[in-house]
Image 1 (tube, rainbow, N blue to C red):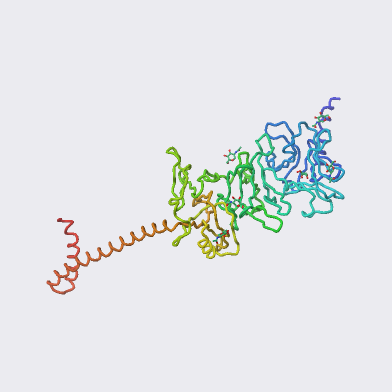
Image 2: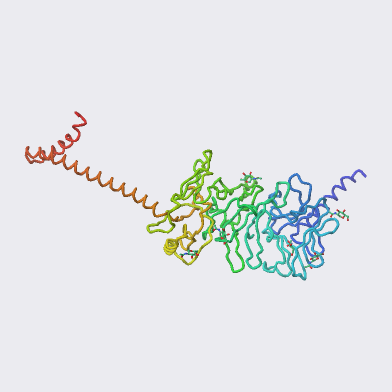
Length: 489
Ligand SMILES: *[C@@H]1O[C@H](CO)[C@@H](O)[C@H](O)[C@H]1NC(C)=O
Ligand SMILES: *[C@@H]1O[C@H](CO)[C@@H](O)[C@H](O)[C@H]1NC(C)=O
Ligand SMILES: *[C@@H]1O[C@H](CO)[C@@H](O)[C@H](O)[C@H]1NC(C)=O
Ligand SMILES: *[C@@H]1O[C@H](CO)[C@@H](O)[C@H](O)[C@H]1NC(C)=O
Ligand SMILES: *[C@@H]1O[C@H](CO)[C@@H](O)[C@H](O)[C@H]1NC(C)=O
Ligand SMILES: *[C@@H]1O[C@H](CO)[C@@H](O)[C@H](O)[C@H]1NC(C)=O
């Protein structure tokens, strides 16, 4: 009798071990359940799936998290439908759908697919993807359902951010409302494909920030996107257009996420301190706020924020208390017609390019210049594809909005050529001309004075004879002549 408590303890320990073992599986089949306390563990133990309560919340959610960092939840199934008790379960229903049910057996969430698998299994893959597939068919194309199609706030390697062009289905990141509440916040991170693809953070009614357009390698204007950690990818196919990324080094554990206040962040796992470190966060500074400087200006942060009007525009304060970032840039001479002889372009370097609507892959930069110059409503042009010889063409026909000059440290800006009215160019030419004339006149005067000096001295020395010594003394005399006024004058 004495040993009964010990024996019970031992038994429960064994029982625990068995249940733990029995559910260290990475898949369930028809009529199997994942209930409270059960977990799916991916085959090489990178990810786990199970029920959890975030932060201070008591509600239960079904989620996927890193095994090394269980508090880092990368996907939540029932974001909008928390389970109030511990009686939820994930299972495969009779008709082959993956369903999340509550204690009343009513369905909270269902993988709705028209395809009915013969022998369905739900498996947590090592990528962090929960897939529903036929047990005999492993190919990704025939997944019946996958969690990667319904991102939460995290973009893992292999996930897509973007569009199915045939069905119009969009994958985007939406942040958690707060640390305690994984329900989708108002904002999102999306791939905007109306013009040249670009990343946009904002709400349906308002853009908060946008990247520059994709330039073949990278989205412009995002600090440190180009780095040693991951390679950004833009896939453009007939029926798909999406952004994804892959790590340069497979041993590095990294993820992209959107935090509750709408910041896109790149995290890298630091094994030494067993914590995530953030390698970049975007929006980065105030200049990243969408259209911070209004139209026809660009934003620059050196010590403070500056709005700089484009050539041909001048700042107009609305009232005297305006700060540098609330001035408006208005056209200097509204009477002047847009298209005149003698127009040209102002080159701005290291720029995040404005929202763009017109592009052509087949034009080269010269053709781009010529076409823009010819068309009176063309406000600016730039190369579409950077890196290893620019090519392609982008043109702007509306006000230029949301330009930022990137700091020298972050080189991912681009050159843009902005149309400058003839009058502005003439002014500049005049200035240049005046400088040129001043320089020429000064040079001529200088030569004349020197000539006069040498001629005077030479006349004096000639009277003394023509030896080598005298030619030296000629030099000395010349110096004396020049310095005399300084010594005695
Ligand atoms: C379950 O059913 C009962 C009664 O049918 C209802 O009162 C309760 O709200 C239901 N619970 C859930 C979690 O749907
Ligand atoms: C299931 O389909 C309905 C309508 O077809 C859709 O509104 C819902 O989002 C889908 N759910 C999932 C999890 O795909
Ligand atoms: C499977 O059954 C559930 C209810 O049990 C239903 O909501 C869902 O639409 C069904 N799916 C298919 C493909 O029939
Ligand atoms: C999101 O990230 C930004 C930048 O790192 C930070 O300033 C902000 O506090 C974060 N928001 C939350 C809710 O953690
Ligand atoms: C681009 O085109 C769309 C539709 O044609 C228009 O709504 C939008 O204002 C344009 N944007 C710019 C920056 O020209
Ligand atoms: C200028 O370009 C726009 C947009 O491509 C076009 O609609 C317009 O006809 C062009 N104008 C001229 C004069 O070529």
